[in-house]
Image (tube, rainbow, N blue to C red):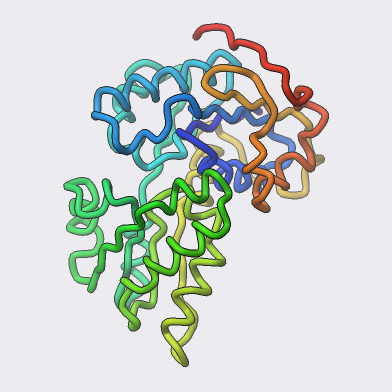
Length: 276
C-alpha cells in the first residue's frame, strides 16, 4: 500500500506520521511546493493550479490514495483535484475538527491563518457544526511560516500572541492549519498557562482523522504492529529530494526518517519527477 500526501509545505508531516503510526508498512509519498508557497495569499485559481501540479507529481508515483493535508488546498482545490484524479485515485481532503470540538461542550477557539479566520468557509463550518457553541476565531499571523522554517523564537512569539487572544474559559482549541499540529504541545502549554488553575485545554487536529479515512478509502485496516517499511519519497515542487532540514526539527519528521532513511536520496541530489 502506498499513500501520498500533499501540502504547500511541511504541514503534511502530521498526517504522514499519523499514517505511519496506523500502518508502519505503508509506503509514503510526500509532495509539497516550496517554490510556490505560501498558498494562502494567492488567488483561488492560482491555488488550484499549484495544488494540481503538486498532486500530479505525487500521482506519477502511483499511490493508492492522496491526502490533501492542507486546509487552504482543501477549501479551494479539492473539487478540481477530485475531478482530475478520481475515481482512479481516491482524494481525501482536510477539514478543521470543529464538529468533534463542539460536541465536547464548553467554549471553543479556532486557531487559523488570518486568511481563513472569518472566511465564509470557516463561518459555514461553525454554522453547520457548532451553532450552539460559544466559538472564538483566533487569527495566528506568522505561525505557519514560523513552523515551516522551524524558527523557534518566531514560533514562541506567534503562539504567545494567539494565546493572548484566546479567552481564558476556552476548553477546546481547534487547530485549523496543518502546520499548527507540529507544535501542538507548545500551543497546549501556552493556552493552559493562561487558564491558570482550570483544567488543561483540549486540542483537536485533523491528522488522525484523515489518516484513518485514507485507509478506509483503500479498504485497509490499521495495523500498528506491522513490520516497518522503508519506502519514503519526498517531492519538492516535483523534484525528488531529501526531507527538508526544518522537518527534522519535529518529532513527526524524525518518525518518518527513522523507517525511511534507506529510501532518501543523498543530500544535494534531485531528480525531476515524470509528469502525471
